Length: 499
Image (cartoon, rainbow, N blue to C red; front, top):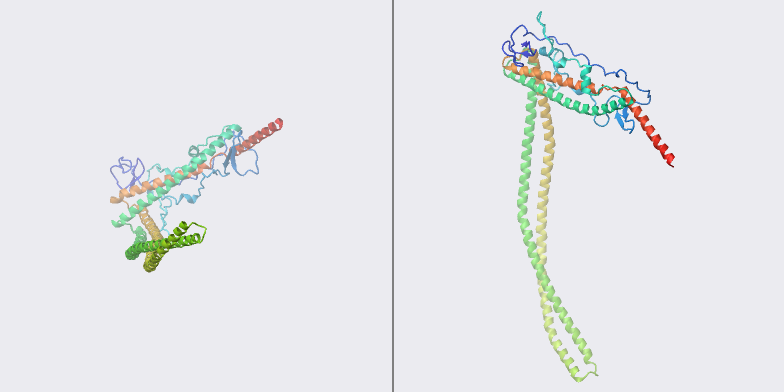
């Protein structure tokens, strides 16, 4: 493997165009990788600008805030430089994840821990020492990840600017800091997402390189222990997938059995529903007939009662001797007529009573048959409902169990990918990623470079959020508080004067 004299990136080819920049690889500049210096520590937060007024002493002020001089608008700023309005984001060193891997083509140092390859220990990639440079060859580092983080870069990213002299300048600066801290928190969150995506992409490329190298039987002896761990991790993935398939097969069988029982119960309930409907209809007909007979009986009884009352009233009138003879004869004729009607009415009453007694039997019989059929239907519907609830419970428990198995599969797949990624990085370290695998090796190198740059951007934004002038912001807070106190005092004084 040589390095392009134009872009200083690795190439498995020794002649022809560079796979990265397209320039000719020939010439003395196609040399082993340069020794890249380790990145220096980031500079300390910027000190207060020269000429800025010193912050007044405030022994009880342990928070950073600022208020406008006239309106007393508070800037709720944390003393460590984090906006406390819900937009801040604490970043510990661990939030950045593991350091990106290095290799002979990318400046030496510790390689990235790409995850676990087994249940008991992590795959730690060995320290990669750069090869010795040929005498008389030089090359400039091209990796942005190795560039030191400078104060100017932090200042540009922060966008706070320099505070203008005087109280108004301090307040404007504090307001600008407050607004920028929110924006920086959003930018840093995006940078963390980009960094995480870069790490995932780097691991995927490294894993692909490891798998293809194993398939092509081009694995170096030094990487064979890592291959053994990766194969074991693949076996774990296969085992977890088999458990998932077994769980799904068992679940489908149980659900099918419950659905069959439910279908049969529904089928058995259908004739019961029809029988209940028929018996209900017949019972209603018998009850209507019973009500018709009862109505006829009541009318006959009323008719007999009216005849009796009319006979009694005419008998009382007939007993009055002072009534004219003609009228008494008419009353006597009415009595005789009414008396003749009574036997027929009584006969009808007796007939209706017999009919009513006959109607009671079918009604009671159908009520009993309907109650029996309804009970059978209710039992069958209860069974259907129980089967439905059992099926729903089974599905819920299966979803929970499947979620656990899927989580195990994802974990095993992640460990397998990490194990194969360790193989890929080891192959690149040993300069084995050549020939058909050269493109993947170059892609892995580019992915590592992008991961470093993404981590670097996170670090720049982290330092940027902490680079504002705390003294000026504290001064702005005090000025704002004093201004608010003056305004309140004037309002109180005016109020007293008006009263």
